[in-house]
Picture 1 (cartoon, rainbow over the protein chains, first blue to last red):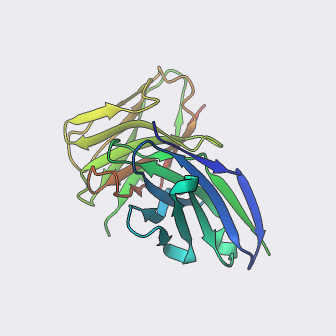
Picture 2 (cartoon, each protein chain N blue to C red):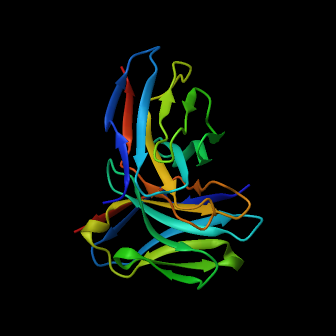
Picture 3 (tube, rainbow over the protein chains, first blue to last red):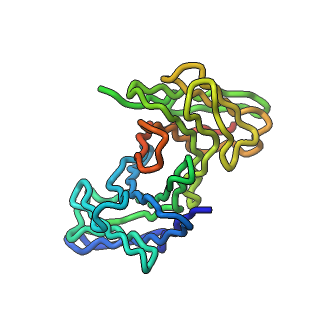
Length: 113
Length: 114
């Protein structure tokens, strides 16, 4: 069975500081990995995805994530946080052996002025 | 513009009552999904459908039912058998059933039992 674990249910950073949201996955087959963002009372929006091409994936809004097989990680980063980045972020995993996507519990990002 | 429309945005259910949540997409996507979101628990899969007139149970299907009579529509009924239905419900779709396609989500329906 596949799963993802997001370390830290809440992360708080100052505006302009580095954003690092952690995600570790578990999968017995090559995974596809995704990061989504959710603003209050909204659906999820795809930020970026890893599908076995380049290990460093760039997404929207200046976010990027690096797939590290040896560490089974797919952490999300952004060099400089903006107030508009405050939201909940979800890591997700799927694979060719599964027909559905598995989501982590989410990390709520707060950006302080 | 193409997208997924969920309605209503807010829904109130009385004890013992069945309610149906609507999900319509005009993206020509093959696969559709229903998730339930509770605080601190992420998203849990209720049902999914990869083709018209076919659907499969997810992890928490008990107390829910779905239909897929048209490619564009995937309504979810929350029955009286669902003992704790208060949650945020999200519908999603995917262009193909292959796992490397991301999902497009609707804006959700917040269901509250009164």
